[in-house]
Image (cartoon, rainbow, N blue to C red; front, side, top):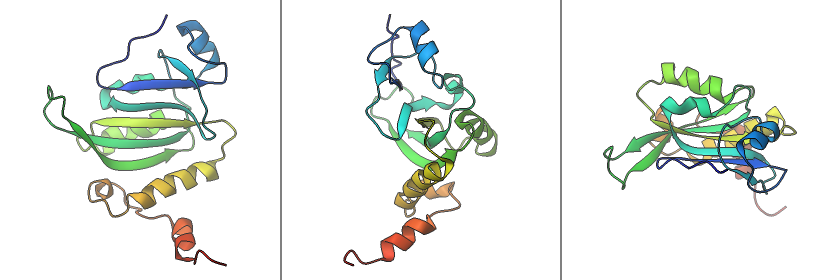
Length: 168
């Protein structure tokens, strides 16, 4: 049995086990995200992903899921299908994306409406998660929307690499 996908967001679960699975096998194979379609992951870093989830739907993520998350502000009218999402924050969670998002609900209240979360595989280190976050922060460092909430705008190790010449 597959679960229907919401009109406003899509939640994908990836598993090593294979293509589509039912709810019971999804729960036994995939710990991080709940009650949605599972698809085999072909990605090296990302195990599970969910995109454009309304902030009030944090229950779709279990505590303890590590990775990168993005906060968005939805633009457009509530019933308008031509809405857009502006990136307002890119962050990382070494321990729990859900706990970070719960804290952002309080500290950044009203500044974001939706989120995306990208769970990393268990063998990805905290340093690698930090590098991923740094890359995205570096990409958005001159974006006026994304920088409203990101205090630390660039990633120094990446900035040092960018200053090097391509040729040895």
